[in-house]
Image 1: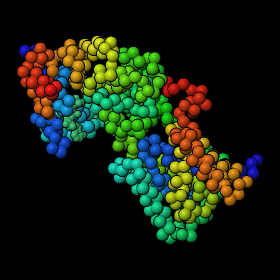
Image 2 (image 1 turned 180 degrees about the horizontal axis):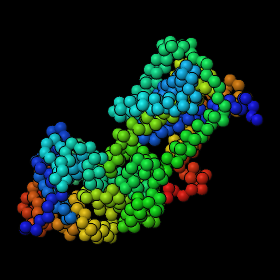
Image 3 (image 1 turned 90 degrees about the vertical axis):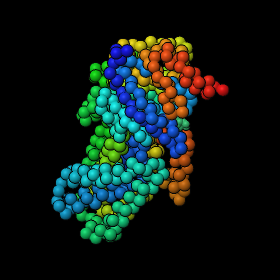
Image 4 (image 1 turned 135 degrees about the horizontal axis):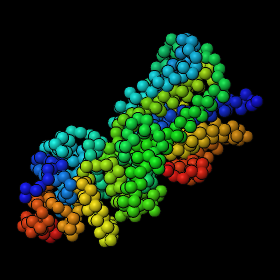
Length: 279
Length: 253
Ligand SMILES: Nc1ncnc2c1ncn2[C@@H]1O[C@H](COP(=O)(O)OP(=O)(O)OP(=O)(O)O)[C@@H](O)[C@H]1O
Ligand SMILES: [Mg+2]
């Protein structure tokens, strides 16, 4: 058996990877969301309510939370169509803060005091979800639908002129991404068995984006690489004591300077899986 | 002259302005089904704008556009594309992350059902895979199948664009300066490919500056100048039209 220390690291990586995947899915259509901690928060609070107050089994609670957050994601996807780049980033950041301050004032679930009573889940259960969704997205990347997503990312105007409904693609990605973020949030809540609004602030959103950028923003398993690094690096740099965050920041800058697309990219992933280009 | 086939595409009094510029003013024209129709005119005449309003990239300021009798005006670009109009771009627009092969799958609508779209794209035995293979062979792109399309020579990129357009299985193909950047041999080869497409019943509307190419290939030609249509007819008629000679001489001096 693995120690509780290592189990906690493993659980954190799984949850962070799901959060990173939620960013990746939206980013794949060319939209940068800095508000995914908001979707995570919705998932965390809703799933916790469903298991603790309504007595539902966790798996059902996670599915329902994902569907609900997916709906919110679709609603957010519409105004997002009108925004691009830095403006979209700021607007989604605003959305995340909106969600956080909602739960801050939402007394039925503890407000600033937080909410507890969830039953702790095993690392295995977390990775069943994390692995399952990672495999799903990785398989989806070989589909025709994903070609539409990449076309929308590369050149939206050209994509629409070859007959692709880029509006549906972009809104759908927001819905899908939000649903995955909600699963991450629900698992987070049932791993830590205590949640408070501050868990889902904008620093969390940044962490999710960071995992994608660092791990690789052009293939889904990049989220895995990024999440594991973000969880393990601060631990392995512990010997540097007070300097470890500085060292971590330096490493990050170096990686981005050397590999703008992140550590894992399409070429490397193909080489690692011994696969010819989509055929 | 009673042998003119029915028009596939009709523009009625189409106008498009940009601020004070009349890029198109009151252009009416019919594109005959199964023929190759040319659009010529000096730089800035409004040729690309014509393609942009037909495909919905720009909405016309006034006027109506019909495809086989159905009104296109007001439809979104992707709806117009699905109605059967495919195009290429004067300044090539290929997808930066995609290989040639992926370009031949992305525009296809054969596996358009929700579940079909979730399956791996372009498996060899699927309909989409076969269509892509056909376009690959037709344009002689087999050797660059898995190369990133944007890294290829200019002329090859133009072929990839045309192949992508054809995989959408259009009724009308719009080509904006298809031989720009091609060698003489490549251009000649393309001329034969376009004649084969015409023989298969495809309707083509093309913009081109190379007069020899246009005159040798097109069944009819429309001439634009400063957004107006100044002449149209057979290549022989257009070549000797005084208004056309005037426009070209005026532009050259
Ligand atoms: N998006 C736009 N905004 C403003 N003006 C435009 C726009 N598109 C075209 N124009 C103007 O409309 C006129 C026609 O341009 P267009 O590109 O259609 O010409 P063209 O016949 O294709 O020329 P060329 O042979 O150089 O490609 C030009 O004066 C151009 O500046
Ligand atoms: Mg032009």
